[in-house]
Image (tube, rainbow, N blue to C red; front, top):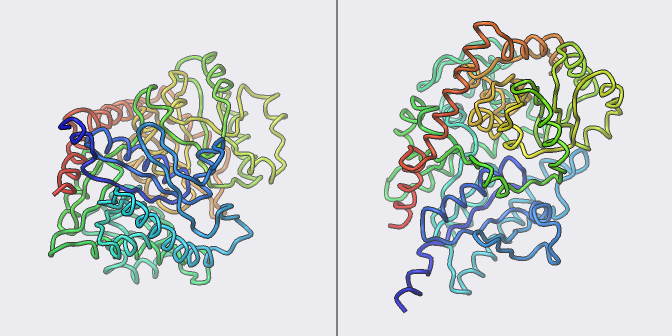
Length: 475
């Protein structure tokens, strides 16, 4: 009887996350770490559209699923077939998902309570701004999982408090300097793109409002005057100054990088895009060590035909083998001739890949990245030098961090948002070449690889922080 009692989970965490790859991967890994470090049940809840892509082979794809470690139960956001870019209105989407999502998640919390498995803490990712109100209505504490760097959290915090007017007035000058209390001087071009939006009619202006809600929600969760708690997908050593400074405002728990650091953990990542791993793994195995240029702009960004042409120009010039990720939705829409490129170069173009698997491969010597935070942490954690080609949102700040930490170079992007082929060639040669600069970049990449691994190892800063959070949550 005593043994059975010990097996009963002390806590039940529900992690509510946005149905995008950049939210799902870190949230699922965090969930597994919580299970590993505590006697807790963890339920993952993303929108029905994301859940169906995670488990396409289930006979009842909208129902609860248990993988032996985590439980998965979707909520509806009113867009069960997924948000259709170019068809659905972003403003309507934001409004509807808040209303429908609140009702659906509330029903889930009621179900667990009735089943004798009440949720004791709700963790939610960025853009799930309606979740704290639902949790509060059920008398359940909630904690935000900030899936971007602490630097971006600090920028938004001060932007919404004191700096909004000054930044907006300088938004058209990318080289204008901004100084925040806890950061070295930044330029306008280094700030998240939402912070420099001046057109209130932009469909993305509503996202800025959601981000303000996300910052405000942290303070609402303060209990008895205590600082609000925030989990961050970063690690103390990477952003020590800003984390230490923000401790005056909120209790930060840096628990990253939330990544699988070995081959055994690769299967835990849930890709929303299906892929044949055998093709690119075998191809990589035929290439010399550190010779391959890996190119990927993530799961959301679309490249114009001209950008595809400029990247192609670079690949023809550098003469290095390359692995290029171009999603099906990007290929079909632009009509770019990939067959001609393949006939002139030594490369492989695929629709998707398991990125950590690629970055860990000894043949990969450079990552041309859009600088999504997951991709930034992955290249840093694998010690692969980066060429930063940021597009929007936090990617601009992440590109600044890549340069600031010395693990890569930032490409100069034109006013039309395109990086020229010769500029990209310059950047690739800078990180892969034999110059002193290239050598220093590779040394820095190796240094940060070790710091990232130390952080998540036993006794490391991120492991200690997550255990401290779980201890706080259990009180």
